[in-house]
Image 1 (cartoon, rainbow, N blue to C red):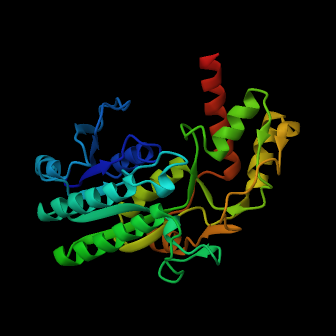
Image 2 (image 1 turned 180 degrees about the vertical axis):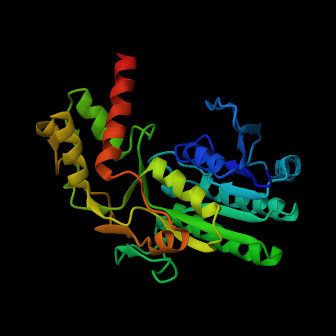
Length: 305
């Protein structure tokens, strides 16, 4: 086996869904975390290290000697990450880790960016065409991370790609986010308070997102690439579908809470690069993805009851 990948954030919501696809692609998979994780599987190798401590990076890289680095770790606490100072801390750590990787002879790096790097005015986000004009600190710092890693990659003449993720959903998602909030609230027989719900968003099941990132890492694609479904759906339709599957339509209160300030009408990924150059398309339909999410939350509610 000559493909050895180090994954940061591999125990996270998205990260844990990257592991199996990479193992299936014959990678030796190493996962680093700052604390003990719930990952208990014998087909990966776990390492404990504080990635925010840049002094630990070269030691970690020298120990593993990865040929590939998939950097997914970041500060993601729901509701706080948009303007959190932790974004700046992670920018510093990202640059340091990438430099240690390249210095050790690393061959290919895939960073996980965000659709928030784009200017959302036009709604459709196309790599290399849509303006990169982020409005949040999170988006600005992620864009800075891309710019810095791109420059660093040119210095070391290695391979670099940057996956801009759109809206993941699925089992184990933060309960405060839209889809798990609606599911868990309705399962408990409570009213789900929502905005008008006319916003269009590009949702992708987290298992598909993990598989897409694995495919991108294992490809020769360079530069930014959108990781989404390529289909826009209204929040109202998502929520209504969930309510119908739970037979709780009357408990959904559209328009009962205000729309967040500066919320764009549409955020959609152009996925031609992902589809045509990587050769990847989603495996799960939105309907099947919502069924899996509902099933997971229903099982959790049963266990906790």
